[in-house]
Length: 251
Ligand SMILES: Nc1ncnc2c1ncn2[C@@H]1O[C@H](COP(=O)(O)OP(=O)(O)O)[C@@H](O)[C@H]1O
Ligand SMILES: [Mg+2]
Image 1: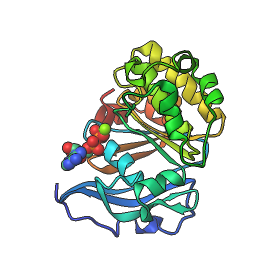
Image 2: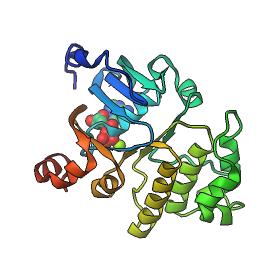
Image 3: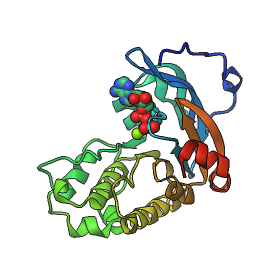
């Protein structure tokens, strides 16, 4: 894809007051491949936003752009997190001001126990949730605190990945397909913890192929298609909209 970006398209959004997390007219490239094609959306403090769309729609690229990972390269647009300009930062700076990305592959560190994986996340201040508070939320991690992280089940590894994000003092939690490959009963368990995390005031963006489960959890939804936004509204609206569901989500 090498379409020329139209930066004027979203210009009218420029001067609206930024939300807690504001993505404005974001354009990003892998080399010369133009993938994130002018994405704008807001996430309000304390809400759960579901970021949905078919395989290859650009969901992971959008999360990676927000986290400033460098690949894809952000070439235009602004990203604000609680008045901090993420678009001017490198990934470690974005992390330091409260961006918490849990990537699809979970990145559990081999050779370290569950507890060491969590403690490593707390090495640099500001520290977020305490170990005790994390074990209260995820009792299974407490039971397995001395076990090597990579030997956990898929669901437990997902819990550990979320725990590591919370162990830092984050303002927003970005989850890339947290339910992938997990049995429905484990999805139930993770869903419950995400609700609990929300009740504690966390702001969350969840990317999921399991759109129905994500929509049941989320307050609002943004749907992507070929690197652009085709829907921005309430999660309930998507669940009720047959056309939207079949065209963009295949559900
Ligand atoms: N590292 C990469 N280099 C080049 N193109 C990529 C890379 N990663 C993803 N893409 C392309 O970007 C598009 C969006 O991918 P992605 O963001 O992973 O979609 P999703 O997460 O919605 O499935 C796809 O067409 C994909 O082929
Ligand atoms: Mg993806």
